Image (cartoon, rainbow, N blue to C red; front, top):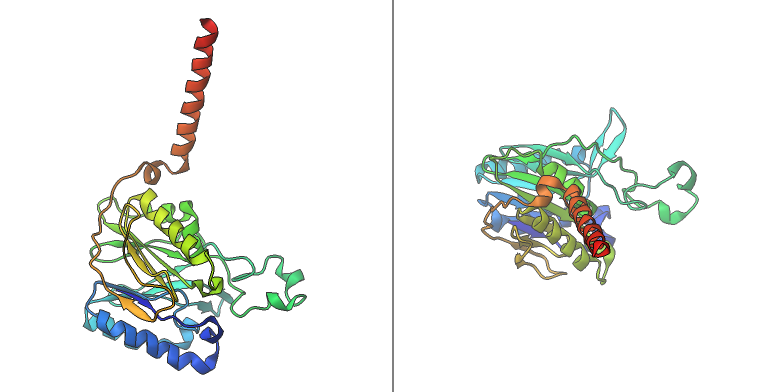
Length: 281
């Protein structure tokens, strides 16, 4: 099950709308309980994890009661290290936390922050002081499958998704779960391009993909990169679908970009060899 709350960007981090946002998420999730997996979008709850422990506890109990796993985007602040992370967590019978590895420059962090921060008002965006996480993180393992997390911008990077995929045990089925908030793009081609990139990750790895976004495009994608079911943009809704978790071995999943390099070198070798043959004639 996927939830698309369709929260306007102007309201997202305005405290006056906090209760309304949470109520939308909960109401759209109600018909999805009982599904194996339910996914909310990036930064679904506009608060840090430690600020909403009561909400998370209620969601955990609801998920356990219905034998569902709920995965949601939620920023996390670690007081001891004084660092903040863009995170994806699961609540239910198998709790997991994943921190985003590749951050959006000038959106989630400011390059050369000590010089630029404060000089230009645009750079003082809310929630723009995050820390990139380490690559040693693991996929989210559940009873019947493993989930490869990719938060928004990360789905653009083939090697980030592939590295996580290769950490899954060979006998375990897997699929990609990517969450996003493309409201920043407005009415542009951005969300559609983002969706095409996500589909490419499914196709090149041979594993299905689910995508939950704030205002679209929310969709189920098979292991060939084909969209099976989706929600239209700018619509508050939920989507339920029985997705076949088919895994197909691909050259890219096994060899990565070395496979492409190998094909290029082989082609160059054949061209060079044909030139030599022509000279001999």
